[in-house]
Amino acid sequence: MFTEALQQLTVLLGQPGGPDFSDIRPDPRGVPKAGAMFTIAQVILFFGLGVSFIVLLGGIIVWVAGHMAGGMHLSQNAKTNMLRAGFGGILLTAAGGIWTWITAID
Image (cartoon, rainbow, N blue to C red):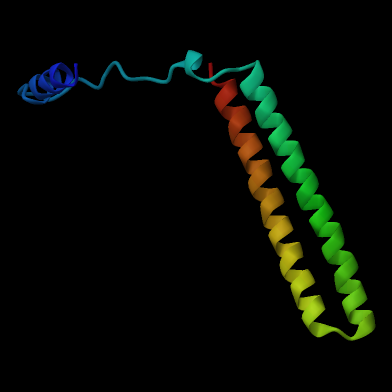
C-alpha cells in the first residue's frame, strides 16, 4: 500500500507542470461546529481564564502584602505572576477568538 502511494506521488510530481493545486480550498466540514469538540474547547477556555484570573487576584494580594511587610522579593514574584496571568489570559482569549473564527468559516 505504501509503495503504491509512493509510485502515484512520483508520477504526480514527475508531470511537466507539477501537481495541480487549483482544487485545494478550505472545507467547512473539516472543523466541527457543534458537538463534543466545541464544548471541550469552551470548557478549556473558561477553565484557563478562571485560573488566570485567580492567579491575577493572588498576585495583587501578595504584591500588596509584600509592600506592607517590606518583602521586595515577594513583591517581585507577585508582579511576575501577575504578568504571566495577564499574558495567559490574552493568549487564551485569542485562542478562543481564533477557534470561533475557524468554526464560523462557511
